[in-house]
Image (cartoon, rainbow, N blue to C red; front, side):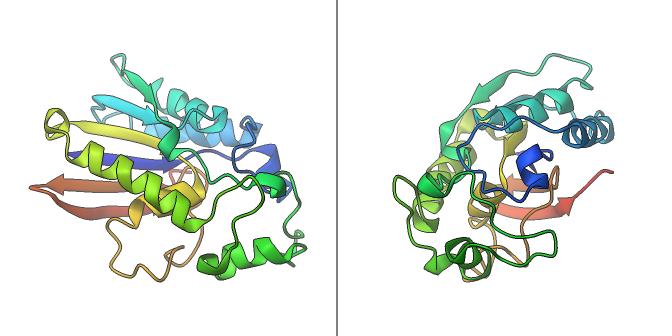
Length: 204
């Protein structure tokens, strides 16, 4: 089984450094272009299936990548891989262009995520780890998927949460940094063992 785990392309809120979890923000022009380039780079990859977050930025990224495929690829939506829900923090500007944080909670989220407190009506890191782990175990344990190549379209925090099932250092949640827009992580799963073949590759 090969999994191509991709973060969505850039949105207007990404450009504005706004907190964007379950807020359903579409791709910006730049995000569309990068998704198209990613599709071009991956056009020789014979995807059997795509599983995407239902949020439009992830779904559209998946569609643009799959447009370059020579055959129609079935697409399934799964809420377990949608972005962390920031609750009352949704839409808050978290830092300046110079990366000076404007919100204490969001500074924690990026610099010390295990101490990020669950916002009102939102989730914390443990919450997103639990739902992405359930998704991971279901997909990698599915006998029908064992020889399939699957595109998974998700989000920055959700991608890192999903890949915690492979990383050897669970304390470093971000694995050094937030995954870049349209960053692709390629995972091979064989006999229950997962190996990361490519990390955060951007085809720009």
